[in-house]
Every structure is written in structure tokens, then in C-alpha cells.
Length: 315
Ligand code: HEC
Ligand code: HEC
Image (cartoon, rainbow, N blue to C red):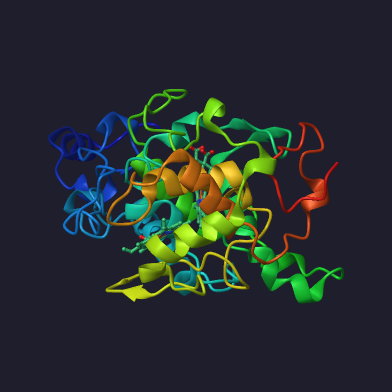
């Protein structure tokens, strides 16, 4: 034990045969070469994925590489790859567009280096796996799958930080964050926000006005019923109704959804709505019925409940 054969040492030193064994997450490999897709999309860049593990020949065929590829497939087609964890028709990629690699569309490049991180809603530190589980419970509405079984809840269908699908997505996101130092806050993080001073007070939000803007600028792709129209390989929405994210998701908060819309939509002309318009649009979308998150009473037990959590009973 402890002594390597001279031949193995020679092979390792020469890098011969190393390819198959290289860990694609090894930080000494440095950052991935490709930058984010620009926030001003054109027909050409709309489908771009700068770092695509399915097409990257340097990734090799190690177990870790296979996990990263599966994580990517889960991220870009969540209902197709993980129907037992997704109640509706939404993929991670619907909100974190271009596979989480687009500026001002909730990009996830570099973010795993920021975890573990304090989570206000839960009042405790979250690992990246905890965060992904939260996305499944809420944005993917995993809890919708057990809703009929409540309160005699069937625990095993809900994802945990050890669920293979969660670990695979974490591997993909870690790969996107390779070479980032722990605590190195990426400059593109958390920029889908409406500045505090531009937030309309809750009683000035106008869902009727939001609906009128929606009918004018969004229905081409999202449909008048908000359920989404197929455009090539992409399908927008569903923005409300039983197949949408549930009412415990970040997107069901007014200012959060407004920040997404403001810089990410309309798809071919992002940035064309004003802060005010984005907030009225958000008020309209979040005035509609959506699946109920059954554990709302467990949120915000430590930190105050935000004013824009419109689906939560006032505390
Ligand atoms: C309905 C929209 C939506 C969907 C679908 C969605 N997310 Fe998110 N995600 C958000 C919002 C909003 C945030 C909060 C962004 C912020 O804090 O600025 C977020 C945050 C995150 C974060 C933390 C980012 C950071 O910088 O700390 C991760 C990781 C993440 N999502 C992963 C996922 C994964 C994985 C999926 C699919 C299983 C997913 N999301 C599905 C809207 C969505
Ligand atoms: C040209 C087509 C197009 C237009 C117009 C458009 N969207 Fe989208 N939208 C999309 C597509 C496609 C996605 C999903 C992106 C993906 O999966 O890559 C999307 C995603 C979204 C999402 C993320 C959540 C989800 O369920 O998909 C929201 C919110 C959204 N759009 C709101 C709007 C609003 C509000 C408008 C009008 C101001 C708008 N969109 C106009 C195509 C469009």
C-alpha cells in the first residue's frame, strides 16, 4: 500500500491515458472557457449554450462526466427526464434560460461557489443541493404529486439532497462553476431585480393594466390562456394554472417575477419593458390561480415574510 508501480507513475507523469480518469470538476482545470450569452438575444443566440456538456469533447467518459451530462438533460427537460419529481410543464431552463448561461436570465455560472449560504425563507444555511431541492418543491411543483395523498404524505416521492437527480443537477452546476474561488460572487448574480426605489407599493400594482400589456406583448408565445405556444424546440410558459410553478415559488412573489420579466422577456426583445410595466405584468400573472404549496406555514418562521408574497396569508 502507498507505493505506486514505476510504470503507473510514468504513465501519470506523461499524461498518457489520463483522459478517461480526469475529474471534470477538478478546480485546477480552471474556469470553463465560454462566457455567458448576452442578455440582448437575437434569433441566432436564442438557442446558444456556450458550455454544453453533451458536445464538449474534453469532458471524457468518467462517471463524473456522465453525471454532468445527465444533470444538463434534467435541467433542460425536467418534466421529460424527471416526471416523478415534476408535476407540471416547467423546466429549470424556462427561467434559467440558455441552460443557466444567459446574462440577466438568472444565470447560474459560478454560483455554486457561493454555497453554503443563508436562506431567509428557511432561516438556515443551504447547500447547493438544498437549494435545488427547494426549486423542485416549488418551481417544479414536486409537492403537486403528493397533494392528493396529503395529509397521509408519501415521503419517498419528494426529492431530498441525496436524490440522484438532485446530485446530477448539482454536478452540472458545479461544472459551470469550476475554477471559481469559494465566496467569489459572480458579477452577473442577482441582477434580475427591480431596484428598491423603483418598486411600486403593493396598493399601486394594477393587474388590469398588466393584463392589457400581456395581451399586447406576450400572447404570441405564451398564448391568451398563458399556457405557452411551441416555437421550434422551445415552449414558453405555462405562466399560471395547474401546470405552472406553485404559489410557494420565488416567481410567485411580485418583485421577483417582475425582475425576471424586466430583463429576460419578451424573448426576442428583452429589456424593452419598463420597471413599472414589469411590475404590473407580474401583478397580473400572480393574480391567477396556480398550484398550492402545502408547506407555506413552515416558511419565514425566522425572518419576516416579504410584502410581495401575495399567495401567503398575512402574518
Ligand atoms: C419559475 C421560475 C424558476 C424555475 C422553473 C426554476 N427556478 Fe431556480 N430560481 C428562480 C428564482 C426566481 C431564483 C431566485 C433568484 C435570486 O435569488 O435572485 C432562483 C434561484 C435558483 C438558484 C440559486 C441561484 C443563486 O444565485 O443563488 C439555483 C441554484 C436554482 N434556482 C436552480 C434551479 C433548478 C436546478 C431548477 C430546476 C429543478 C430551477 N432553478 C427552476 C426561478 C426559477
Ligand atoms: C417570442 C416569444 C416570447 C414572447 C413574446 C414572450 N415570451 Fe416569455 N418565454 C418565451 C420562451 C420560449 C420561454 C421559455 C424559455 C426557455 O425555455 O428557453 C419564456 C419564459 C417566460 C417566463 C419564465 C417562466 C415560464 O413558465 O416559462 C416568464 C415569466 C415569461 N416568459 C414571461 C413573459 C412575459 C410577461 C412576456 C411579455 C412581456 C413574454 N414572456 C413574452 C417566449 C416568449
